[in-house]
Image (tube, rainbow, N blue to C red; front, side):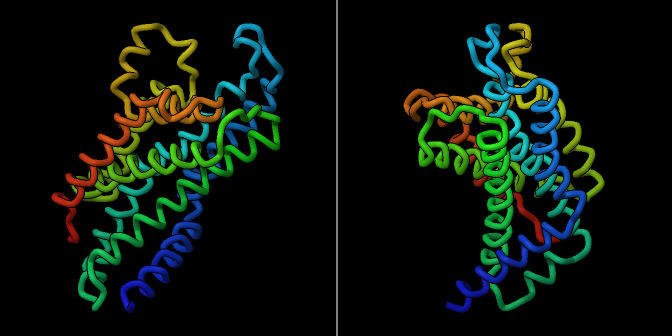
Length: 250
């Protein structure tokens, strides 16, 4: 009972601490929203024949939502965890009566909540602010969001386990993140990319988040995205195993 109460309180604290970091909030929650607003202002969402009668935001909204997952998973969580390790926060938590798993669970749940919040804001703004057409099922879309968030959180904690300092985490995060955002279709739609680039994008995990979100938003069922589900599920399983093996408190 003590561990359960402590877990609930720690999750709330983790979320509050995150929301008090202006840089983290800007890059993970506000930047995708700002990109959506800018593209909505510049391009609008009127149907275009080149896009099969769909608007620019109809095509690109899934990419903007995937930005939240990618930024938090590749940069946000590793930098935050490395900083806490450097400053001794993780060591002090381990010395408390709380079980180590309680702290780790609270950190995972807090970051998971931030991912889901960020994706939800993007989808709601696209739907009600710009009239992006939604043809899917909310429960199915939610399952896709939960799987994607969990998969990238597992990657985040692997990176946080092997990168020694916050400065190194920032460098590695930027080196991995920006090519991933471009190649995956989160920023530039894959429809306009050459076939060679699209072939390379198959090796980028965020590609599968973008295509899964886009398909589920358009009304596809989960059975039509088995490849994306298998890839992200594989990333989740391998990531959890590696993070559990490699995670360091100091």
